[in-house]
Image 1 (cartoon, one colour):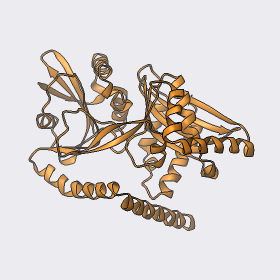
Image 2 (tube, rainbow, N blue to C red):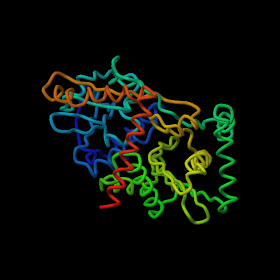
Image 3 (cartoon, rainbow, N blue to C red):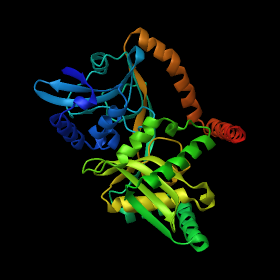
Image 4 (cartoon, rainbow, N blue to C red):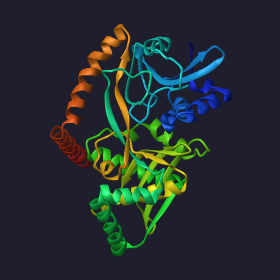
Length: 362
């Protein structure tokens, strides 16, 4: 096998068509985060993005998008933002993980959402569920399932939706709008959520805001950004921005106006989004890995993703192990224990409140 490493902008139309063909040939690759458009758009904003093109004879048999950091540290494209990572490759091709990262000039490749069936997977890698809303049998079938598995949540959400409309007026849902104004409202809510819960604000980095805005303006048969908002009269109260292929919508940035928190606007919105997405031809909404209560309530299936690293003997891999592996193991221990996870979440929220208070008084 021959591997050539290029920048995303160097991929030609033939390469992109081949990438799409390989992606469409295996349902495991049906995620917008594995689409060529995602890598190309991120690569236009981040110089560290590369694509390894895998050749067998005259045939291109795979594409491996990654970021190359100092000391040969490799990471997924837009690491920390993606819920599906890995290679897009032909089904029967044999790929040696060590040889691949060596050909990419990497000492180590670290991942946290590697999709199932990847040649990069090794026995020691930890595996995690990634909840989905499966709409392949239609929205009505999904709702009937939720009534059984999360009946209390479904009835409560329906009641709160009716009460909200009695108290404040009718609801309106705009699906797949391309208006920048509601996007900026949504990102503002998300920033407030990050700060409130003690997390880092992703949108404090201008390139991520630019990335989202570029995706909002993208709408093709194979890939696009999807912004949808629920309004109370003309006031937005909840929304979501995600990415799609022709049949999969990846959950990315959901948020809501906390002034309406008692009505559970996030759940109201997600059910409305699922209905509109199904009408638009979406078969799966991938909500992504994460211990979130709303995901457990809304899911009717799940994928599996893995976390770990592939490394070869090198100083860079040794430094990476010391800096990252003990921290990742400690975080995994916390997330796997409900009591520790709840305690950590409360600590972060307390930190968020203190940080917000200090910022307000300064």
